[in-house]
Length: 115
Image (cartoon, rainbow, N blue to C red; front, top):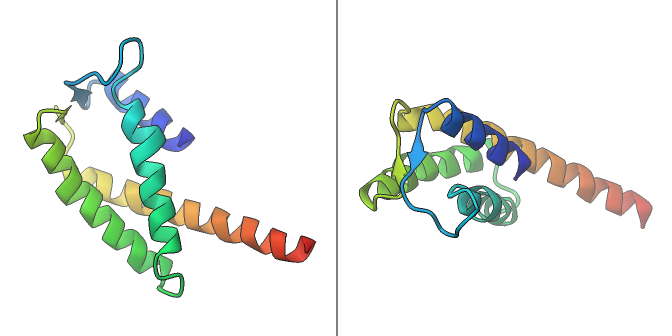
């Protein structure tokens, strides 16, 4: 959540993209995505098919986020990628997922050792 919020704030501040819909007054419009949708998607994929290679799972998630979700947000008028191309998001989503998966496995291993 922190990484996506930070990166999203930088992208909006640099004018790479903008959000056209505000979900609540006084709250930045990207908070809904950064604090809810992206973390939930990562948690879902971490839990789904736990024996599947995390790289494959990250590629599937990145494909859906970059080439399905983002274009749908543009069509719905929620997101305006001013100078940002959807394929720029692909490696970022892969990297964020792999970091989340790694951290999850590290915390899980610590719990097993403490039991």
